[in-house]
Image 1 (cartoon, rainbow, N blue to C red):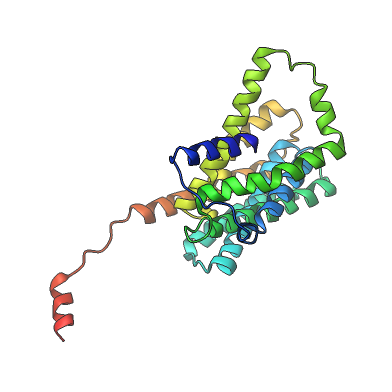
Image 2: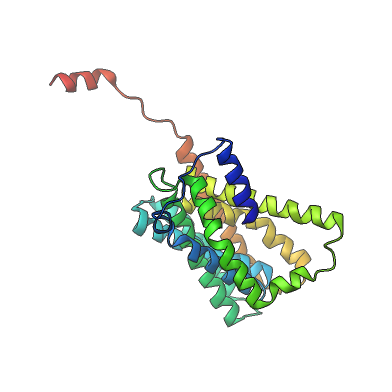
Amino acid sequence: MAVTIMILYVSKLNKIIHFPDFDKKIPTKLFPLPLLYVGNHISGLSSTSKLSLPMFTVLRKFTIPLTLLLETIILGKQYSLNIIVSVFAIILGAFIAAGSDLAFNLEGYIFVFLNDIFTAANGVYTKQKMDPKELGKYGVLFYNACFMIIPTLIISVSTGDLRQATEFNQWKNVLFIIQFLLSCFLGFLLMYSTVLCSYYNSALTTAVVGAIKNVSVAYIGMLVGGDYIFSVLNFVGLNICMAGGLRYSFLTLGSQLKPKQPVDEENISQDLKV
């Protein structure tokens, strides 16, 4: 958050980017993004610690239909039947995989479904707030970080995380400090690229792109994580999830690359004369 604030503020001062100056309307324009942001992180960390990596990856797919539903309700978007079918193929695979989960953890499932809700709502509201008439993409990133850095710091103090961080014995290690600062910068790039994807596409496309990215995470987790319990249904479910995600990508890309129908100028001119 601190790196995000610093980079965007310096860029604004140097007129590289532009976003609205702070005024009393900014909190109203930004709400409820900060609350969704915190809820997303807390539920995500809680669910990750209680589920195996492949199962966490599968259950996170429920973010996609929730995003589709919220985009329809909040943004008024409409999707084709093929898109909806590919989304439900992802969910079918998730159900098959979760139904055969041999390491079922109810608390973990509750947290991951809460994480899905927060993620979907955060993506849709971010898309809404990025409207140039609202905050714009840079304004959303900057003010969200500004409003959440102090509450997050307070939570870190109350849970003892800040004390553990300050007592960490590698702060004098130059290599660790370089890697830590690099991770902060890469975190900013990750948030920026996610916002940019939603800005030029849709919150649903961003959710599906994230699901496809998790293809490698799921399969590597089977080999490296050590906490994956293999079953045929679980493995089949994983593959159905991935196939549905790839199908959505091809449909979306195809619709974007499809050439527009040529306009018959002669008919238009005749219509205008009439």
